[in-house]
Image 1 (cartoon, rainbow, N blue to C red):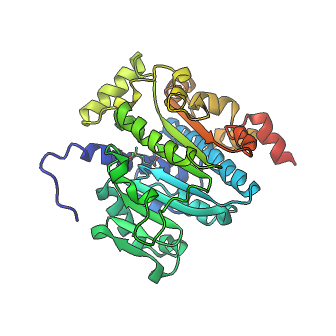
Image 2 (spheres, protein in one colour):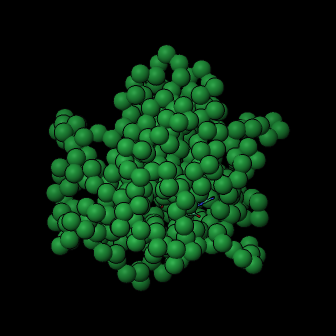
Length: 354
Ligand SMILES: C[S@@+](CC[C@H](N)C(=O)[O-])C[C@H]1O[C@@H](n2cnc3c(N)ncnc32)[C@H](O)[C@@H]1O
């Protein structure tokens, strides 16, 4: 165990991972999502209460939307004859790696890297090491190595790294892009690379998250055929009465949301990327996504899972969360990548009919 810090002001931020994992576990137990791995990251998983329908629906919409963007990224990489790299920042107990590595697109993955505070990576590394269902996906036991006092884990495909993302990435994330002796950097700048920030940048100052996004952009945009995508999921528009209640509830848990300050509305969200010279960026609220961007069959299926009385309340919550995606492509073959983005229901339904 890492020694407890005397005034550990980051502990409440790290604990937000428990909420995210419990919400996912609940959505799985209520059949909104299928995820055989999340239970391994929640202590006493079978005894955890399920969350209200409103939370389950929010978790479903967010997960399906991010999965869609991730799958499209893998498909675009394959269409170019390349494998792709995924870096999940503030990954917490997320299980997307296990789903991908055992799913239809597993051969498209070159590397999956997760980063979080060392306390959280140590917990995750221990959970992986002691659970066969998790560790066998990573490879043979001899290929899975712990490092940095048990806070990091390395395997042929999956890497778990400790870092405070508020610190200068040139130091805290240097192993991603610099050579270590004869070993190449973890990230190959010639491969399409997708960053996932699922509910993490909001806990950092805008300056800190800009530094991080700029640092990745500089590395990939300097390549001839650089392709960098980034997905951000988080709350925004917290200046209204709903937002003020959310902020004050979180303050009682010593959690603040400085990252939401520059984004009063959904139109402001793409500026997060465009101001840093990403080629393009878009944003949609979870309310928009539920209304127009989830396949009809799935929407119909989940509508039968639980009684939902408060549709207006659901919309109010969903319109304060958004998914923003930004893209940087360089080189002459970039056109197909500009199609990367959330697809409207009609397109999803057409694809499913074929
Ligand atoms: C709300 S949880 C989300 C976890 C996961 N991305 C998901 O959606 O299930 C936020 C995560 O971001 C991590 N995090 C927040 N600020 C961070 C920082 N400065 N450095 C590293 N990790 C951070 C927390 O420790 C936590 O695991």
